[in-house]
Length: 226
Image 1 (tube, rainbow, N blue to C red):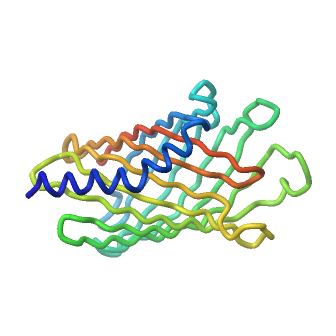
Image 2 (tube, rainbow, N blue to C red):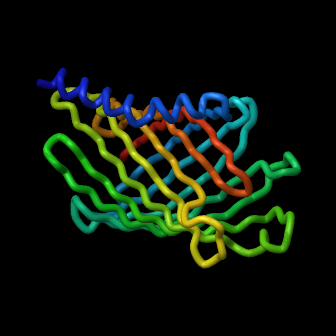
């Protein structure tokens, strides 16, 4: 039974993502690395910290590195909300790193369905640049991000596969498109122990502005809970 379920999950991955990989095989490639921690401050309140490094141009250049910190309040095992701030060193068009600032407000819902966990995330983000190429860059930009993730918990096995997608919807500012960026992800989550876990993920991202740009990403994520 378990082998049959795993085969179905693999076929689903192939049907969803192989056409994207084939279509995007001549575009950019990057490696992303993430280290994150969760620390319980109170019964329902958690402190979240993360550090990320992202590359592009066939992983030959560092595109950005950032630190993020925030708080998450868990109302129950199905619903949580949080806020965070991110400081980014971003490689701009002058090929130098300049600061960017983002803050986020997030609501996350989780629904267990048998061996599947369905997670929906609604995130508001506001970004400030410090490198200005025109007057519009001096104004912050805002997005609503909507993410849906399905994870399969393989019984009595520490590795769990998942697929997810995310869209970026611009708000407050005039835009030519309702969605100006989207992502498709597939990966595996390995629970090393109760406090340590690792994720290996493939992601296809298309960014429509200022021009269409596709990137294929392999990301490695390490998470510590304490």
